[in-house]
Length: 106
Image 1 (cartoon, helix red, strand yellow):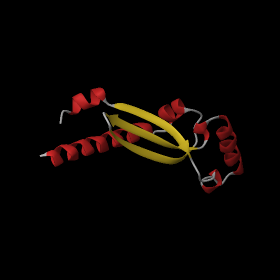
Image 2 (spheres, helix red, strand yellow):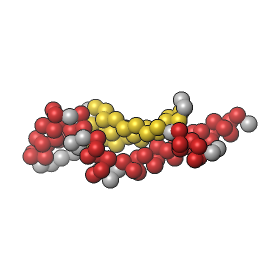
Image 3 (tube, helix red, strand yellow):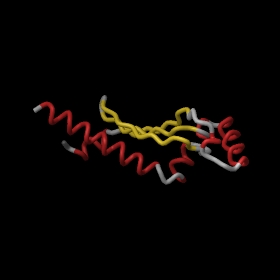
């Protein structure tokens, strides 16, 4: 497996998916709950589950993080501290999947 070649053709995507739990399950302070609910009215990133996906050809692996509240995708990427770890984990899982496919072929 040529990791550099795969990395050069890999696509990383990030999505804000619906979060079905209510913010009150994660926040104690009423002001925080109100803020998250208001932010969610403005943007999908206000209350969501974040999905980071590494894709190469038709193979993809994703990492998820629930109960997130951010102003935007950019806010999540720059300020959460989670994006790089999620991306790294998705890429590692993608490499493991590719390696398993290759080993199953021989």
